[in-house]
Image (cartoon, rainbow, N blue to C red):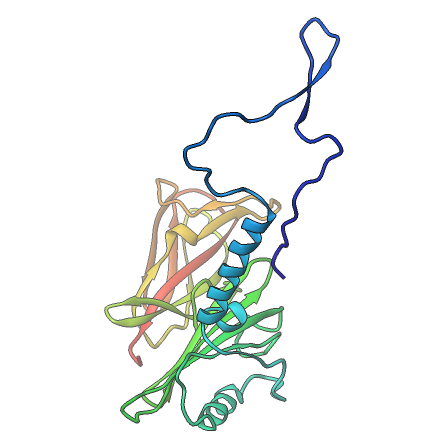
Length: 276
């Protein structure tokens, strides 16, 4: 609800208390006597309330429910415990609408639509009407509240539903995330690997199992090492102690020139797939 402004009322209008440095405060009455050429707009409750009403009316005509997407609808549950019927439910709803002359916004609370859901959040679901009779495009933006905000998107284009894509995935260990990032025109996937303890002045390899990867790289800005008994860590350095970090033959390989076996490592991989 908008704030209602009220004028200030006092028992002694325009009275001010003057406190000299020497003490002995006293009161005076101040009256403006500047003979204005233009009186100007009065700063009072009537003026501010009028401005508020104009703003509320303008927002109401442009964005019903105040969201900027047109009509607002709320859906709390669709009898779909694991989220597998989300596409069918949306198709059924939008196919029942004769004409979309605006973009709709829906709110789904704790809807299990993707890996990040079920933690509290909501989704904007926008559908655009195709004037040429082709299937309607649907775009879902899911906001999951998980100690922050994790954003995932999903879309239907030209009658085809596409997988969930993450803007800022939660990066749980061993989970593959298809993201909104693109490389050479293909979706970029993220996956975080537990490399275990670093080697003792030798070479260590672990299999990453990404057999469908085409372009693959280590993101050194998000790969870390830390002492196993410490909560602190640092980015994985490539220096005289860690001679190289390599990806070959389906493995993550790290070679050390000194004993770093007290350190634990997590390796962040980014890759595209030959199947996309």
